[in-house]
Image 1 (cartoon, helix red, strand yellow):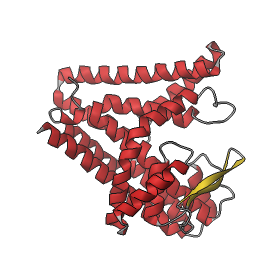
Image 2 (tube, helix red, strand yellow):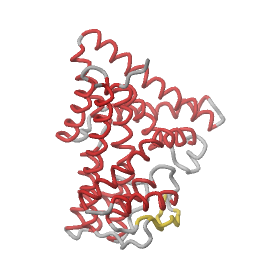
Image 3 (tube, one colour):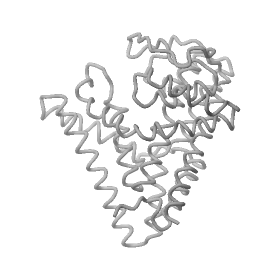
Image 4 (tube, helix red, strand yellow):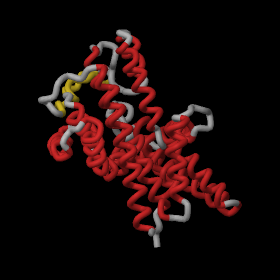
Length: 324
């Protein structure tokens, strides 16, 4: 019978340890960072897949499936070997790998750099810093557009950078968490609707949508509750706004946290945006909201932390109650 990692002996210790490591250290970049190695593997795999398979969709599917399976096999094999040596070493390694899967503090720090640049009236610097976080074109954005994009980045990454990896870690430990990160990294590298990746990255993009489907919806009450605590926004009002506007997003998942942030902060998100030189007229979320301002970025980061902590506490609490 399957037993979630959070319900295993001391499994919650590894999960809490991962959270603390993320809060204390952030996402330190180094050559041995698992996600960095995943990126290198994807670049290598893309060249080989394209060279050997003419059908781009099949090439992308084969490469993605192979890398996802390899990730799960390698991580779980190493963890199994370490567990045979020492259970405490196994928990330590599990905590370290799950920590690498989370990016709460890193996301907050990078977005706050955009906020600091706007507070210093350095719009060009804010655009450059934002360009490191988004795929949209930033060079012609005004202050409000920069703020809007930063808030949208925070809200979208609440799910795939915080909720989803922790969700899979509670279920399957570091092995499933790292497997999700491979899915997420594939989507971030090849899941674009450009000429180069429209077919090659289609499988990876759809699989990422599927992997984030449940965590995105579980984030709804967390964002609404954090909005009640941080901004005194009525819980029911925020939930109704999310359910009303989430469907307006072109993504089946990101619309949920994005709408939540829009209604909690009282701002209008979405609208025209330039991707790869092409203007896309995206629908507005919380159309009646005001245009975002720089100070809303700081409030969005507060909401990010609040939503993440609630998700962590509820996830762990439910498993601990179930195991008692």
